[in-house]
Amino acid sequence: MVTRVKICGITHPDDVAMAVEAGADALGFNMYGPSPRYVDVTEAQRLCALVPVFVSRVGLFVNHSREQVSAICRQVPFDLLQFHGDESNEFCASFDRPFIKAIRVAPEDDVAERVAEYPDSHGVLLDAYTDGLYGGTGRTIDWQQLPVLQKAVILAGGLNPDNVAAAIASVAPHGVDVSGGVERTKGRKDPGKLLDFIRAVRAADLNR
Image (spheres, rainbow, N blue to C red):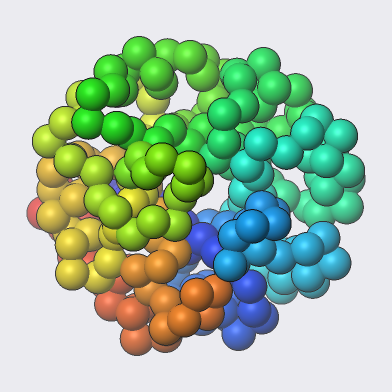
């Protein structure tokens, strides 16, 4: 079993090159204006053009309108859409592109019930819940809380080179998603942390 690695919050050409060289399977581009990792359409176009074939380009949206998502998708060649807000399954499925739905997991949540609300998703990204924030909090989920799901799980929330192996051993996800855990400053990746993170994932895969 190979755990897929998504490096999210890419904002700079150098970070595209570093993540690809380190072995990332997907790169995430944050289209959510309030995020410190936000990139506008022009920058997203420029960065996506640098991503080689077989590495997925993921556009991250948070409570955008239908018109906003459609306009961005006409201009930026995202391979996969990631909805990280309060969007419905119907909304997410309306753009004629595969999507994953981020679910912010609170301790009291019935995770399986929430996942079932998105039957058209190609996977679910499980992140830690913080009131009023849509990801990027650096908080981890209680991995023992998560049930076995009949859907590809991308595990996020506070992952870093030191804990990702334990996360994989506990959850056995389809993929892992990291942003802040491999940064030197918000929006800029650290080459050493990137390499250490992906090496830790690959080492964990050998023990699955």
